[in-house]
Amino acid sequence: MTDYPEADFARLKTVPITARPNKVDPSLLARAPGRDQSFAAFWESLPDVLAVKDLRYVAEQIAAAAGRRAVVAMLGGHVIKVGLGPLLIELLRRRAVTHVAMNGSAAIHDFELAAYGGTSEDVAAGLADGTFGMAEETGREMNAAIAEGARRERGMGEALADYLERRRSPAAPGVSVLVACAAQGVPVTVHAAIGADIIHQHPSADGAALGSTSHRDFRRLAGVLPALHDGGVVLNLGSAVVMPEVFLKALTVARNLNGGKPTAFTACDCDMQRHYRPRVNVVERPTQTGGRGIQLTGHHEIVIPLLCWAVLQRLDGR
Image 1 (cartoon, one colour):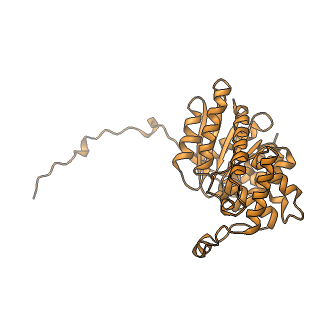
Image 2 (tube, rainbow, N blue to C red):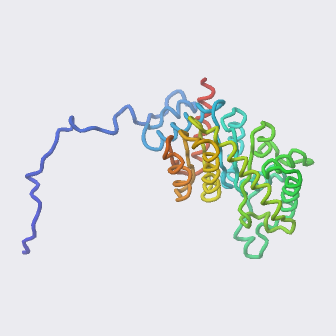
C-alpha cells in the first residue's frame, strides 16, 4: 500500500453558524400563489435575489426617470420580430421611453408588420435559391422613403415613420413602433450598417441616401444623450453589435460637447446571451464615472414583458 499524505480533518477549525453572515433568509424567498393572482402579486412573490433584484432595480429606475430624464431604448430586430412592439408602444405613451434607436433589422420588421401585416421569412430556405431578402415591396418602399428623407434632410427613422403614416391602407399601423413614435412626438432613429440589411440588396438601394439619413440619426442620438444625466436610463434590447457600437460613439460625442456629461445613469443590456460589445460598450465603460450597469439575460419574449409590466405597474401606483 502506497503511503500518500492525507489532510488531518481532526485538526479543522469550525465556526458557529450564528457568527456566519448569510445571504439568504426567509424574507427573500419566493411565495406560492394566493387568492390575489394579479401581476402585482406575482411581481411581489418573486424571490428577492440575483436577477430579480436587478430586474426590479431597472424597472424602478425607468419609472423614476419617466417625465424627468431620458429613457433611450435601443432595439435589435429580434425584439420586434417576437412581438414586443405593443409593449414598447405603451411605454412611449406613458413617457417611459423618450427616444427609440433601432438597428436596420428592427426598422425592417416594424415596417413590414405595419405595411403588410407580416414579417420574418425562412432565411435558410430563401438562401438556398437566392430569394432571401428579395421581397420586392419591402425594398422598393423602404428605399423610396429613405431617398425622400435624404432629399428633405430628414433622418431615416423620421422618413420611415412619415412614409408609414402617409401610406394608403397599411395592414397594421397600430403595432408599429415607428408609427407610434411619430404619433407621440418621440424621436426615432435608425442606425444602418451598409450591407447588413435586406433592403440594401434591392435594386433601388441608394447608398448615399442610406448614409445621409442614418448619419443624421447618429447626430440626433448624440443630441439626446445629455438628458440621461443624473437618473436617466439606456436600454439595449437585443442588439449584439450595431447599437452598442453606435451608442459608445454617440456617448463620447455627447460628453465631448457637454463637459463630460451625461453620467450617473443606468445602463441595461437585455439579451438572450451575454456578448462582449453590449457588456463593455453599454454596461461597463459608460458607467465607470457614475451610475450602474446591469445585464439581464434571458429570452426577449419573457424578460422584456416582465420589465415593461413592472414599469407600468409602478407608473400606475404614482
